Length: 269
Image (cartoon, rainbow, N blue to C red; front, side):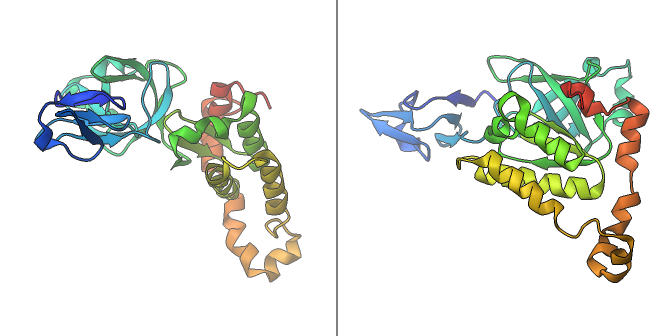
């Protein structure tokens, strides 16, 4: 993290230069203080960018990152945080040369990774040196507000278990609010709708009952009709190719029986 930026809390002293005070600050007795919890920028102007809803990395978090840059010895990774993640070449699961880094991970690649360490200056070190971690090559990745992750998982994993069972998808929820889904297209479509519904309505009581009704209603839609209906109904014909398209599911079966994500999350179906 740059030296002119730091994590601050409400009421924290920032500067004596009152003339430079900007958004996210207030002035009292000739001094500038932070008015919010966030990242203070002290260059040119004194402003604080609030962090509400942002992901703050902690050691041990399993997250999903996207490679944004390949440097001499590090992959720079977007982790949906004010701080970028650094994946050092030594944290890759096999020994490779610096000149070959882009052959293994390049800009735009997604990875399931682990936050190995976060120092006081918020340098975030990542690792792939764990059998649970890997590059993501199939399925879909969607983003939700990181603060909604506990609600998506539910008490004792109840909500995520319902999502998996009702959609027949493998689902991994990263602590940074990135979610990896694999399964048949129609199952993933339903899972995405359900996840965004949970994100929108997590603050309203009775969410579990509403989700039960949501899945019941979805399954009563004419998605799977008798064979004669497939011929007669154009809507069903559009969905028909997804029935036979199974690349994501097949990849999982080849790598680990029962599905990678089920094994990672200890979900015994």
